[in-house]
Image (cartoon, rainbow, N blue to C red; front, side, top):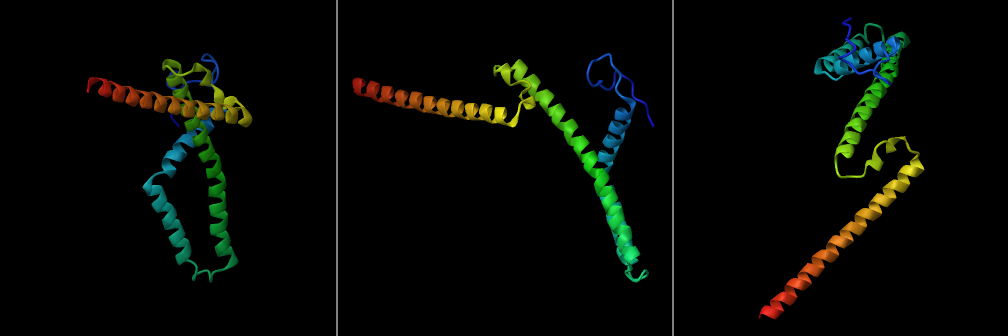
Length: 161
């Protein structure tokens, strides 16, 4: 297994603390496995295994053991993939959240939204409702300005005629 340098991978938590070696090992295995699982070759290998299993059915007279082999294999793979998929989703979500937080920080939007993913569902619902109300109010304001502009243009046209 190839070792990574501390500078090539950011440490979780404080910058001067090394990552837990078990967590690092799991992260490396999860990354490699999720990349491999998404390839066409991996799918073709899995489909080939199922095909071989199906073809061997008559040889084993479709016995309980024959069925147990595929059931056990798929159950184990599914069980392990759940953890790998969750790890991948957690990593992706954290990366997206950091990117969004940075965009919020450097833009004209409110910095108060940075970190809101840590709030409760009720607090998030309250913020979402306030944002929706603000958006509706802005839309009404824009329509009012637009209508006022149209009225001013008509009045100007009447005066110049």
